[in-house]
Image (cartoon, rainbow, N blue to C red; front, side):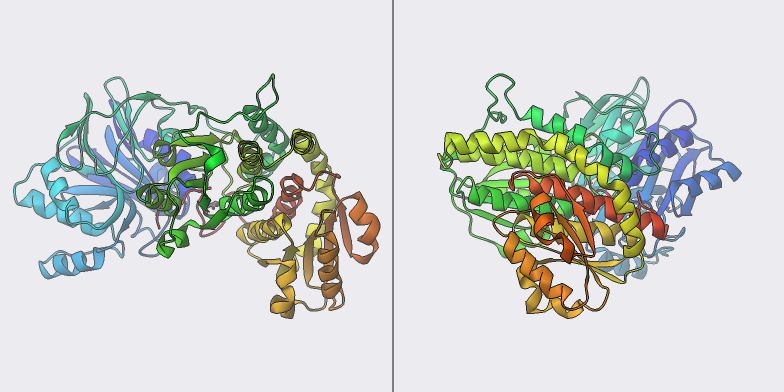
Length: 607
Ligand code: G6P
């Protein structure tokens, strides 16, 4: 995480850097800073907190210079203070960094013994000192940087300024993403195309191990072996327009309300308009002969994968292994020849998911990714890309990315089921009809907003909230608890309803809210028994079910939310929405920073 930006232009660099940082704020927002070369010297302004605070600093103490670098931070090493904010500098260089230098302590000890004085607790500062020492030994900037990078272990995207050089920025990447932008007599560097889009649409992505020297005239890239390399220039799809909140108080609420539309868009993109069949991108493997599908993802995307496992196993009869990406690769799981590895990610940049992808590539698996950001590292490293058409998701708390992932995975399941002859025509027609009604049913669910807002008043007072469900409802219980803790900071846990009695039920006491995810499916009766168990222990039950479920058990719960009656296949897509709204309204009552909750970032590019 952390976002970096660099500008070599002909006008003042500072306003462009700050604007770019605002577009990168989703990557981290605990401190920010910029540096420029003014009159041949490095000048810096930094601030803890959000970019608005950096702007206030710049208003009092503006920064001159036409070349500069900027950074918005998500702290790894060192508290989020102004001193630890990037850019880090010596008298020769200023540097911004996204990633983690894993051997920094060893390098720091060595540099300290050689007389370097460190000002910060960060891992990044060692890079500034290593380059400085090489410059002092007479190396030119590019060579000094390349030699310093050879000493580093870990992941980085870097942007570097040099004293006396007001027409040069050096960038480098290993592990963390970095793009270069081509302007007219100007050049740019950025963590992603979104940051660069208002400056230029002509973008090239650096590859692993690349080092680039940017001047006003262009870019010279050296690859990992030190050879001059060409990197293709693309016209980015990203819009330069800033994404707004419209009439909504928060991006999260706007994104929740966009769901009927973006679910519909994603669904249509997977349908053949004439035949009505599922349409996937051309596949370099036969879906019908896959021995196994392995899914890895993080956070909310992992929960989408959990639901897909139920679908793929039950409907398409294909064995599925799924794990959290940060755990998966260390299990060293045996993988069958010709298997498919599927990675789910909104951003396409999550470091753990990317590492899992690369691991599976080495194991000879076919690589598929389900992504919202088409121009991302995972997209470039996959054999096939399935897209969610959620549009930019700005709120850190994932909402529309999740439900569109589910829609795409539902379509993928039906394609697998047909390819494997696992499903009859009638059954396929029934499930396709269920899928087609999701956008309108999702719009109906939004009608419960006011009711959920009322319920939020009670939940906002709770110390612990429990979510339970079975089958795909279990994954929604996990997702509901994650939403609540992420933005309201209330302790929340999701449990498989059947597992309650093996420990978690000890948490249930008089008045503890238990949200029960209970569409009337084949597991309804069993979930109902678990609901009775918590009622018997004084829980305040919030019952999410449909007309049949409410008719059977509605009078047993303290609060009832009646959702539309749909085929159980698509129920998890709809049941995701009330748990999002509930978390949102609780967070509003508690006055938290909903779109940028504490300690979190939207895109996590460190392991
Ligand atoms: C972060 C976000 C989560 C997200 C997870 C995976 O933790 O805060 O909302 O689910 O990363 O992100 P991805 O971009 O890979 O879906």
